[in-house]
Image (cartoon, rainbow, N blue to C red; front, side, top):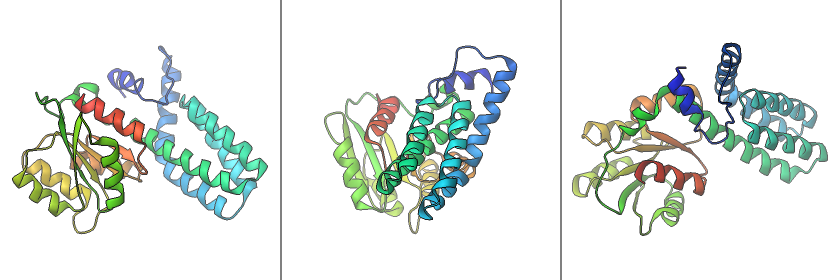
Length: 255
């Protein structure tokens, strides 16, 4: 990574990166970042599998390994949550383990995607992804095949600052673009029938729209992120969507 990308990494919520690092510290840090991103999906699957099997001995062991890795990438907050989960596993509260493990995996997926975005884009490149408009109320179009999620997004977004529209398919979204004012931002689910988020994003770009596209996903693997970036993704939100993080993203891109 270049120094600009390091400065961008310092803006990621959840990473406590020091002002200065030696060459060896930098090399170790970047190596651990790559390790975290490349193995997170496998680790998450393994942790879930061990919990389902009630194999608490190995679940604790894997959580300890994960806590150490989080410490190496300076994710102190996530490391602390991982440590708390280890203590919960020791106490054997099954329902609490399920809840906290799910929250931890979701948080780590978000962190992994943010790290990958830092690897692919600098701050300047991200700013070029959208147009500045003079309207005070920005239009947001969300596309997801689950109406429940669209209703949730509408409840969070729609108001004096943003105008929300939701559609349940890629085809409906393309028809919408033919007859409505271009949105200032798109929120697109990746996994949809008939036309998935990748294809929809490519169609949006082909029509000349350059508004930011935020993908909704549960997949934080490097291949999935790269494929989304090639399709036109500006950013990502992990499902289930964290309301505060959603509003932070909107503020970041729309002000």
